[in-house]
Image 1 (cartoon, rainbow, N blue to C red):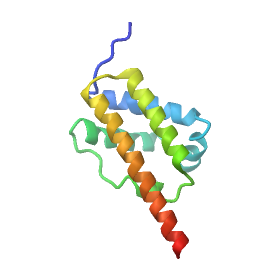
Image 2: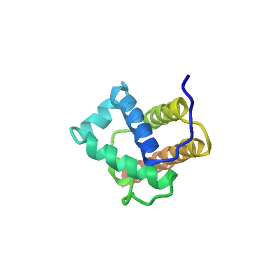
Image 3: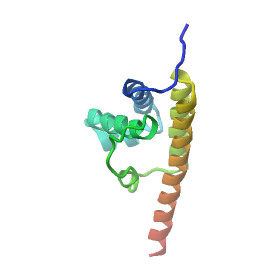
Amino acid sequence: MNIKNDIHSFQDIQYLVNAFYTKVQQDELLAPIFNNVIKDDWPKHLEKMYRFWETLLVDKHTYYGAPFPPHSNLPIGHAHFERWLTLFTETVDCYFVGERAEEAKWRASKMAIIFESKLNYLSNKNRAI
């Protein structure tokens, strides 16, 4: 029997991020986008994602950066954000349960909304020029 726990440690973050991005790399919609941009730099990207989620969920400030700019020129839209969020939520639900697991899903949903909104704004702004 697999007993689920909440997200408590860096090791939990690593497990979540690795499981999630394994799904992303195999996803018909998302894999081409991610693999085209990240290419052979997956270890570097995963390390950045460990730090990002550790900062958000485990109260250890180890991520420094701006998460949106790398996404600003990608050919992505609503379907990509929807699929990303579905995979993320499924991954959290598969391995974790608890307050921080719920927070991870909530933060991911807010991030998807904000990123999509910013991309729409930039797209509309560029069309107006």
